[in-house]
Every structure is written in C-alpha cells, then in structure tokens.
Amino acid sequence: MHGGYRVGDFLNTDLQALATLTRCEGLEAVDARELLFIDTETTGLSGGTGTIAFLVGVAWFEDSEFVVRQLFTPAPGREGPALREVAARIEAAAGLVSYNGRAFDWTLLRSRFIMNRVPVPNVRIHADLLHAARRIWARRVGNARLVNIESTILGHPRIDDVPGWMIPELYFDYLNSKDPELLEGVFTHNVLDLVSLAGVAHHLVRDYQSPPERCHP
Image (cartoon, rainbow, N blue to C red; front, side, top):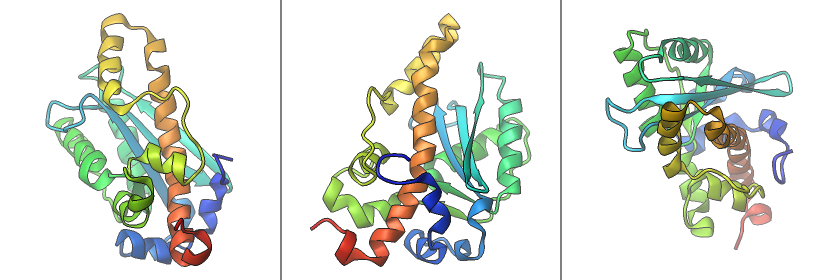
C-alpha cells in the first residue's frame, strides 16, 4: 500500500486509456510488466551539459512485485557504470513511464550517454504523466508537482521529505564530506517518486473512465 492505493493496481490499468491521456501511441499494445519507470536526481534543475544525473532510479514489475533499483554516481567523472546499467534497462524495456521525463530526465540522460560514449538506448515509447495530470487535476490541486499529486490524489503526504531544490546542494555537500548519511533523504525521495508513478498512472485512468464517481467537484 502507498497511501490509499495498492501499487500492484497499476497492472490492472487500462493502457489504451493511459495511451490516450498521455498521447503515447503504442502504449496500448505492450505488457505493463515490460514498462520501465524512471526518475533522476541531478546536480541542477535547469539541465545543461554541466548537469549530471547522480542518482537514477528505475523500477518495473516482476509478477506482482514492484522492483526498484537505484544507480548512483559517487563522483563527477565516474558516471560510466551507472549510465551503462541504465542504458541496458531502457534498451530492454518496451517503454518508459516518467513525470516530466520527456522534457527533463530523458533529455538529460541522453546528453550524459553521448558525453560518456555510452550508446544511446532506443526509447520505443515514453508515457510522460505530467501533462495528463495537469489537465485532469490542476484545478483541484493547484500545483501539479508530483508530491502534491501524491498527497492530494493518492492520499500519501510525505513527512520530512527532501525538497527538490535542496538535492543538488546535498550532493555537493556529500562530495566535500564523503558522509553518505547526507544523501539518505535523497534516496528515499527518489524511491517515493518511483512508487508514486505507478499510482498516478492508475488514478489518471480511473478518474478519466469514471468521472461522476471519482472526480472532485
């Protein structure tokens, strides 16, 4: 359980409806267990060639289990192992599920692949949930940030969560001190983002298909 929903409910989600909502052609034809959920934590929020994704979280379903892997870059210049693992996961997946991933996460990762001479994996389909969430819930939640959707729609308010703007600073503090405890909240934040993606996708379809029963006035 994550808030008011069961994470495995994503496996019962109508991917045809999700494809319509996210304008992701081809999503309806894949198996939900072949999708890869992805979220990055970075050294900057504006992107650019100097920004690295020091933590890349990926998740997928194995049977009914939601499996999370986090690939960490311990220092700038040592991205290779994490990037190669991420690239292999993306290449093997039928498609990606993200939140603002088209504009940010994938764009940044693609740049890092190129700069580290890692072959860019083929992204067959990419369901970015952000714009659908804005269209359906913006009037209700005001701000469509993932943590707001998670709290308001999924019923899981985060306690003592690390805000996104602090994450680059915490990584730089870690580089100076080598104290891994500084990053504990960042790793937790990343896991919660991944788990929430499955819930947001399921709730988007639920509210789209049954608005009279589901939607807030």
